[in-house]
Image (cartoon, rainbow, N blue to C red; front, side, top):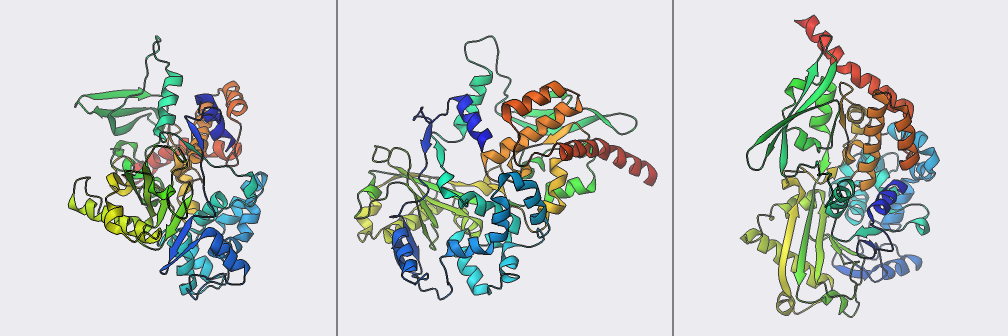
Length: 477
């Protein structure tokens, strides 16, 4: 994470600048849990467990609090990953069981029955998320439940992640200077193709793109880094790259998860006026809304917008079916459904009066977004071990892949940065710029994923992949 905060500091997104970087409140004692028709605060749940009842929602399936059950089940891996210096060894051991889903792992060797597994999933994550790779759930556990919680501080960027991109642009290309920005906005890549030598090796890469006004551009580069989500890359014409079967399989098959977010602007900050005021943190439910996130920014301020529903997996697919446009009947059904969940969760009995606090809303279904084709990478069993290495290697030594899907830290900015470091490292190494490699490591430091020998081996393999494909094609023709 050092690299993430170094970037923030360089961009002026600092703790001192409270207008850009704000402390994020992950959890509070008074946050609510609404499951099986019962409503309890975090503090009440813990008090129940301390008194000998870890199942206050009367599911009949819990012998410990859900979070503790999952952490205990994953403890062998959590212990390995708790030492960042041991990451490579821990990752190797995790890959030995990458063939398992979280669901199969909890069944055997952990010996939970299916009813217990379903209950744990309901409390801890999105519906059907336990069908994804065990590896994903281990990394998620380390993210949200680091073994030394006192060392973890959460932050959010005021204005959203687009602020990071905007500040990077103005830092690289300051306004009112002679250096014009080379960022091409409103431009879609339509084709990627190599210049191929007689032996099949790549000597350059050409990128074709179309602007929103219909004009097109063609540019040729020594190296290209694609950060396109693989669902988007599938819509780009890469036929002339002549990718080998393994690489095609990785781009087609690597799994992404869905997410739906719904924000509502109310006429007042009603959540801070309750008998049990909510000032930051997250409330959860087994109702369709699933997660309610109270603003960490502007606590007790004037802003009246709240992320009223954040869902993943099958929960997101079902809510996403109602995301049909802001003025559609379907979205007004969605809003009404969420408002009823909010009223029930917070003990509000006069729904008609409560619903009149609604001002406007915005719903976003990541699966329906043409620029992401999913919310984030969420690999299935075996995909890290069998397919992932294909997208951390370059192709032809000149086309490189980056983005959170090409890091082990899916869905997070740190994953995007780690993958960018790898791609830049491979480019600098391929052109023999050893002095710049030293600068890269000095300025941005290495991370737990860093393995110089692996990076260099992947670069070598990537360089030869089109040559091998070329020779096989010649032999079969």
